[in-house]
Length: 335
Image 1: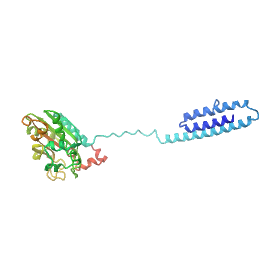
Image 2: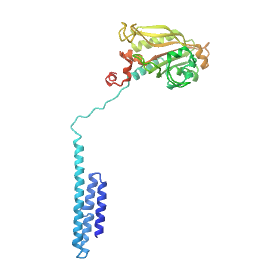
Image 3: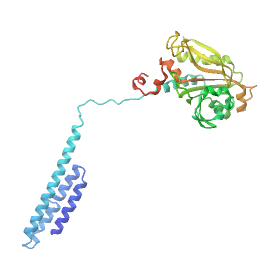
Image 4: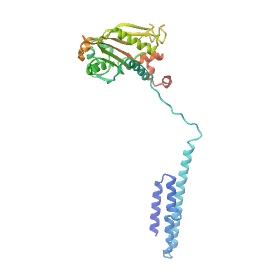
């Protein structure tokens, strides 16, 4: 009987250590300390013992019951204290907290708006890799190795023939390789150049456009870009086409709009000229068609490209491109 009581106590204490909630603790009390519990059942068997052993075993049984009762009450108090602490830390009378909803970054909003405008004109959105082969980034766009035009697009080299793309123009070549005319696509995405000042960052975003078909003219290019500018910035936006040079277009033109920061009076953003260049454009150079097996005697086309940060700066009247990348919520919440 003595060994049975001691073994019961040992087992009960082991179970008590594993209990984590009041419901389990109450089941423990009933199982060991209740009227029909283990200890009560054992003590009912005292009558079958030798009269000389009854006082000794009875005393031991009571001591064990007292010890288990003390351990049970201590565990119960700890659980009640813990529950009270949890309740005190949560005030059900407080008003609910409204969840904070995020929204699209202004650059993402600008890219989507630009793409939407051109999609309405029939252009299809295509996307490509940020890490690009030198062939697609330069050579197939009529910019061979050691050509001076590469200096304008100095970039980051992964290896001799693998670069972080300097524009999304490689997608023009990739699309023309994959399909025959007619082609009308726009290619948004991140690009990389070694520039960093108030109007340039080493990583920025571009949207490039390409249209190739029979009898495409420079007049259609001018009409397409004029329609885009007027829808993006308003019907009264001043606009001019300025002759320029790009290795993969001929003839080529820069497109400028009146500076929306200073209203054309001159500021640091427009270099005191009153005009801001927003994109480059031109008719696709026939040399490019040789890389994609298009017949330049049959097909013609135009291409254009614009930086999204610059478009967003003009759209929202922002005078520092670095604000887009500082993660300042006071700035971002305005959009």
